[in-house]
Image (tube, rainbow over all chains, first blue to last red; front, side):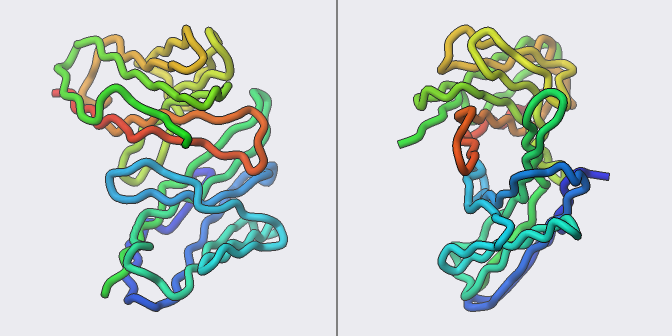
Length: 112
Length: 114
């Protein structure tokens, strides 16, 4: 079982729709959580951190549920430019220092 | 502006060849990383380095080695390329302490081994 699991999708949604992605992590020692965005044939880039109280950045809202060990990303009013792969990222400590684990990503296609 | 560059975008090599992938960052970051990205598997860490001449194995180091002689440069070496090393290779760098923690990625090298 992967330490960070995501639904690979693809999610196909029309412009203006609201879409939500979930991600589960298996290691309860995980400390920090992030969403990265990766456009087709491009490198991943940090989209937003995920805080325990939940946080919002424009049309994007991230939530963390430590008890159930999942994080979510909600995109409101989807734009064509939101089409990308969204990577769930978890950071935790360990015997060798901090480790960053990337999920395999969820693909989103927003259609006109 | 933050910049991580990789020596090649596309590379085709033959089985058994020695392959060098180079990565350079201009942000004075302590940490540098090499990942490979394959469909359905996500990014898997090959090696990382937290200082010049220091290296640590990641999750899939077999068949790879690395070199970090200067802070800004981190090289990935495939001693004898094999077809199962065909993949997208991504280099990244980060500060040791930054809140929120962020890794900055290069554009990637798509390596094909025939």
